[in-house]
Amino acid sequence: MRTSRTAFFMAAAVCALLTACTGGGGDADVPPVPDASPSTVEPPPQGPLTAPEVDLGQKEVLAEGPRRGTWRGGTAATHPEGDLSITVHCLSRSNPADLTVTFDDGEFGVPCSNLHQTAVTNLMEAASAGKLRITVATEETVRWYISVQVASG
Image 1: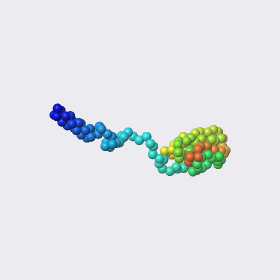
Image 2: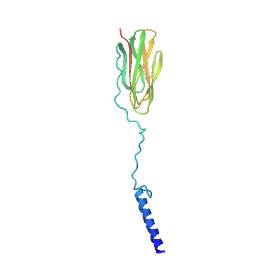
Image 3: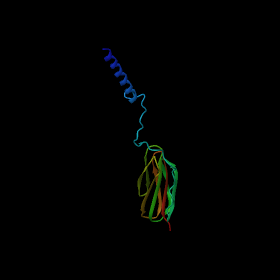
Image 4: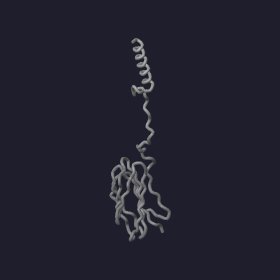
């Protein structure tokens, strides 16, 4: 009987040692395993917001910015009949937000990112020469530039 009792205590001691060595008895002694999956958190915006450049063979007739939020408008200098381009660069300080450009013949939207500068150019045909009135509507967290260009000469 004494032998079976000693064997029982020996078995219990070996079991306790094995459990302590393998970490099966408690999580406090086991260091956490780092997660190898890629992060879903995006980095903050990179780089500054820049103004659109004047394209080769173009003449800028209106430039506005940097501005933030809604702008009640400006009038482009007299432009000839023909191709016009309206370029917007924008960047949101918080969540992605939309920016809407309204002009005499219509409007278009620009989805402004909160990670990197968005650049959108809208080409249109001006049916007649004249002035072009433009407004910008967006959230106060959106910074933007706008440039209206026409073919030069």
